[in-house]
Image (cartoon, rainbow, N blue to C red):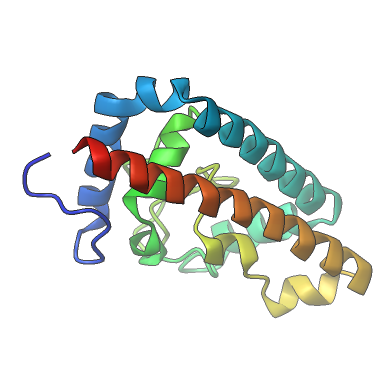
Length: 173
């Protein structure tokens, strides 16, 4: 796509979304047909689901959704967080069948925040890893350890997918 460079923090979130959508439209079918990418997407989907299950089980989902939707500015899900995302994590969402939101819930909220929390499936490492004091006080040390270990599995697969996508797309453009 003319005018775009690979992973530039100088791109707006709208440009990163457009670039991810361009990659998906142009290469999505070939990328998902690639056996290694397809295998990693399946594993990643399972690890994200396991992370979500643990967060639900430990009460994190309820606390985060309440904070994100009731605290002015969305707690840690405030406006500007979306700018940390790059086109590759956004592309992974598209490859996983997740639509990328185009409108904000509120003007002080992250673009990706919805009424029940984040609308993305693949998330930025901060969004996966960060646990505020409210959450860490809620969890036992065993629960915190389990959740952090699970987050690590999720993030490792995301890193593997990003690395492969960057290499494959660099060779195609």
